[in-house]
Length: 309
Image 1 (cartoon, rainbow, N blue to C red):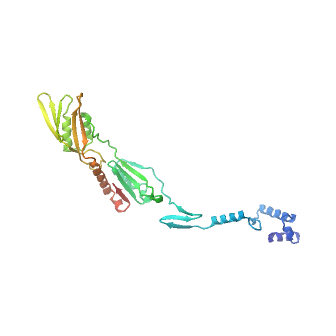
Image 2 (tube, rainbow, N blue to C red):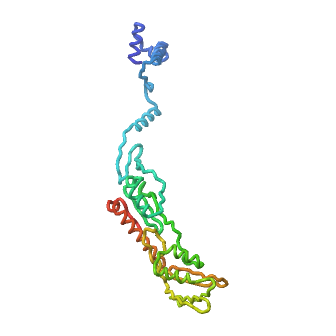
Image 3 (cartoon, rainbow, N blue to C red):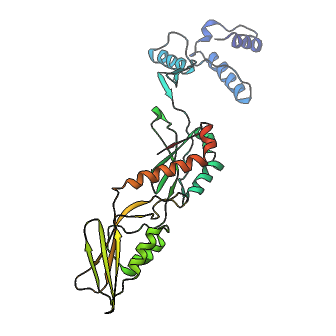
């Protein structure tokens, strides 16, 4: 029993509290204990032992051990560029990554460039460095640098897609359809004007005869009974169709022009076949990269942007 309780008993009753009265079974002990609890409820705050005196049980000792482990201090250390903390075990602390924004969709290269330069979403501040990749002649992407655990994550931030409708190559078209598309989907060149002149002189009531030696095609346009006109087209024909972004100088490539009369039909059909094996795509990608590099030179020289093509 505490000295405080002994002194309190002596003050109230004029005699000391005997050792036998410290026994919890003694009524005097119970009276004094209840009196102290009453005072505590009134407002006096006193320290009460959490464990009975004597030897601690195995469970109590285990509880104290675990409690001590929780209260133990911890250390933070960096291993191979990663942060670790030793609590119960050595645990890796993953860095807090920026939240991903919805991907920005852009329709022109100039708009794509303006988005990067203006940086309204503070992408350079978040990632430190950005990467532009030219996917093909019609797609350009803006990525973050690699981040996350083991640098295994990369975010797509924006992309630019060509919206124009491509010409239908390797397909026979009717005369009117071919003429309209030739005018609308090709840059004007001398070769384009010549193809348009030949195709435009064909009419439904005229007979069209062709002869072909594999290199050139002779088109004989019959006008009535009195006149005939011969036009020789050298194949392949160099043309510049709109196949990449309008900000870029379109790539000129060779095409084979074919004209035929389908059996049983009056209308003449015309087709253009690609004759460069798709090499124009590599040239278009190179021109897109050069255009982006020229307009984003400030960020490239500052080490904030890379262009991959």
